[in-house]
Image 1 (cartoon, rainbow, N blue to C red):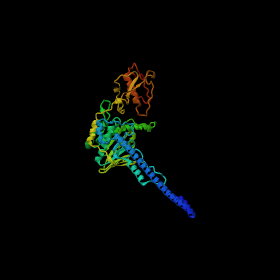
Image 2 (tube, rainbow, N blue to C red; image 1 turned 30 degrees about the vertical axis):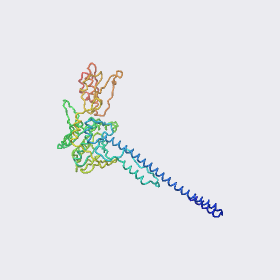
Image 3 (cartoon, rainbow, N blue to C red; image 1 turned 45 degrees about the vertical axis):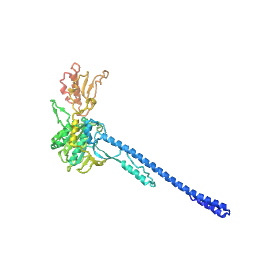
Image 4 (cartoon, one colour; image 1 turned 60 degrees about the horizontal axis):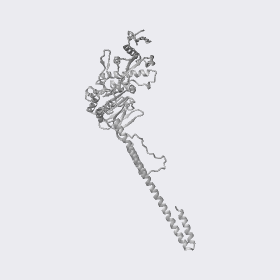
Length: 491
């Protein structure tokens, strides 16, 4: 900037030495023009810089506005999906009445055992960050950096979204705090479980004091809380009709009926040579809700509850323990919901991958709304022809033989589409499955029972002139002892 000035001063010095007045005037004019051109250039550069900065600021603010609009759309879609998947408790009555989304959750869904417990500020579904330079010499305009930080803070979380309690890999869940709030959130969880999951996929076992019928009596209408009817040899229905217990003895009987077979099945799987981690037991998911749990009670020390506490997810059993103020919680709790009387609730996940969600506006459902939901669900059944059959229920062979079957065809059970499962022993050339087969299973898994079923089914649909049996038993002859008197028995 000063080089033209120095050059001009040289010309002035030369003009002063020269006696020519005209040259002196021209030199002065040249100096003035040079000085003015330097000032004009300096002003133009500064103005150009300011214009460029203003243009960049406008572009960046426009960029922030575009991001704000995009993130607002993301939040809107996230809220819309949240309201669709996890409706508020007060909406359940209307949804069930209209059969909206009824029993849509299936066992293969990742969120089958995920339940809403309240609302809170939930992180935006899109991860956000400020892309700042690692260069320590980088400078940022404070107001623009503040605008970007404010935008990031505004959309880091979305208020009023569902807080989800995932029970998929949890054995025991505890809900502690004021009793009125415990009952309200428990009703909300049970109601949404029954509204979105079919009875064949999810069962409910609930324990409460006999004096609390008003709080829990609505459960009697739920098809999820009804026992699968079983029959003994005299064709009499055995087992409790409802999966509700009002005493420790009734709860013990229900656990013996509903949980003990799962324990035995899991032990057979684990004792076999197959990869037990890749095999699950054949039973629906079971929610065990215990009102008034105490870690020092006889229930907490019972062997079956210990099995649930240690291996509930493998047994497909989750225990939800309502722990009143002052009572001891089970130490195995993997998920804790704390609901104080006059404060926001807190959800805590224990363990190395633990987390904490707070503050939570807790979901609470009153008894009247819960009973309306239960009564709406009471008469409903899935159409077995569409394929939602309770495959854990007992099937009577005589019920499978009502319709005639083709030669060498043996009905042996019910398939998941509701139709008969028929074993066709004809040759493949005759359209059958072939005359030879192999049954594989661990000890006690039911191989002999299946063989007897096949024999009895064939004997009931074929005469002794059409078919005969040869029984070979290397385990003492007990498998076919009751069938040896058949007229079809050749040896």
